[in-house]
Length: 145
Image (cartoon, rainbow, N blue to C red; front, side, top):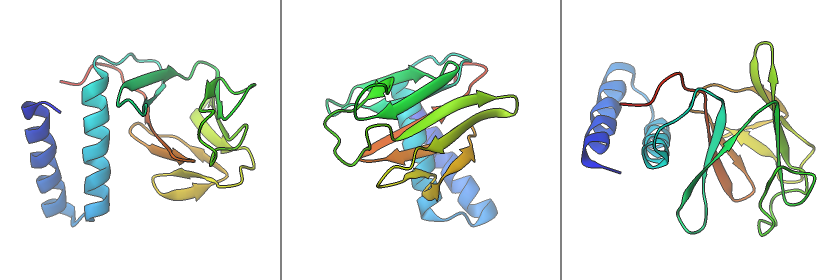
């Protein structure tokens, strides 16, 4: 993370914590999201998932009409080595009210911001955990900066 963004995250976290008494867990979430977004580079307005590969490379998957995440096809985003993911673990799809995530009766569950969900509306910056994978959901109008 470059120094300018790191300073922004630290200053923002201190301001938020002082003003609202936010927990350290939420501050860590803010730091993680900021680091992933900073490494990803310019973002499009189209909803997307950011995630880190084992090589530390940051990848972006555009949601489109629907995105299915799992260990094997017909998933559109496949993590075949993650045995904690189900074959078809969760899907994100567009609705008139925004994007929704649905757990597809996975064995180990899907979590949004640390809460286990069956279905949930997504907001910009939400953290999604499934198996060993952590994703950041983004819906941006402009680049950060």
